[in-house]
Image (cartoon, rainbow, N blue to C red; front, top):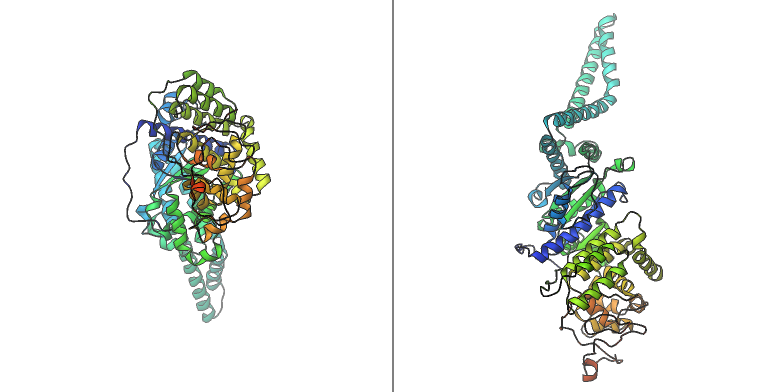
Length: 571
């Protein structure tokens, strides 16, 4: 699959509903960053977060704006929190972050990308220091010059013995009565050694003083170990910020494939901060608002010769690379239109704010929408649910979210999806749950609701192409269980339909049926449901009995609760 790199849709003005949805998701991202700052888990590597979908750049701007708000009395003011996230429930950090912006598209024609990223970090830190006062800037500049001098003296140590030897030769040639030849030889050797030492030291001095300047890029990359020099400079800049650092890399999905891959690989491997092992406050987070398809296509173009050897059925080739780069990937859902006729149940909003588990929140939202919304989503309730779930997920004690973690861990133990899927399961489940709430999907509130959505999340992580196919034709879930490929499907997707591991996943208690997939992928009140297959013969053929629509409230799997036409589980 190749992405059209010639056009880009122009951003549209955000509606009130879209703005509220972005604010709710932004609060979740902010709290994730704050939890990582307090208890880092990414080691020396930066925490990379990719945001895809409509409004991804607006969301990143909201996060960056909040991180830069001034700190007062150990936390941000309530008015600032409400203005940025629409809620006072945001966990207020102890101090502000330093935000650095890098326009990848502006520098894609000048290599290497990591050089210009460090240069932008250096320049923007200098400007921010100036804004904090002349005394603060002078103190930081003095520290910078002291660091450069220390590096220069370190480079000078290897040539100091040569300098001393040259001085001794000059002394011997002038004090002892030896032949003119020995005097000439001693003077020549001493002069050459001195000149060499001066040139060596001068080169290193210029390189140290100009490190971070575009004028010295070629000189630096030609030194013995340029990567070590740049890593040392990068670590020093992070230390000098005195705050957690957030870098926003914009317009990456407008750049050439080679540049995209080189920059992401440099972020993952080169720009590591060893100081995080001794100082946990030196957190570096990288926010990348970019289309996932563009990033996958970039890896496909760069590593095209390996796609046949490394291809995994049911997964785009580049997705494996992207999954290993980003710690958290968010795909923003399109928000559901608000029902202006629905009664605003303020009491329910307050109950949601006090809820202590995901299942409790599900039951509050689903019950209130049945009573007040007439089967349609109520945006105020769903936004409150997203905010509360975000706080529960990122609560330092971890106690309120045990129901979600327990169910997801049971699925991992039963299915063994592999380390990559296991590491991504929890954040991916949170994204799926947010999509259900803000995308206007039906909210299940029965005992197995978390487990079913967890199964769908694992399926989407491991076989995303199959998930896209089932979203278009939910009735094909029955074929997956029987390990049969539908007509017209071939290649990698056909292998996935007949894979016994996929059949095991869809049959895992409580199972995934066509109705479940419809609720996960369709909005409430959407009547555009494809016909369900009631029975699959040995040689499938389109017959009236096979293609007749199955009522929505018909149970599809043993033990699955009956469903109303609106998709609400019955007791």
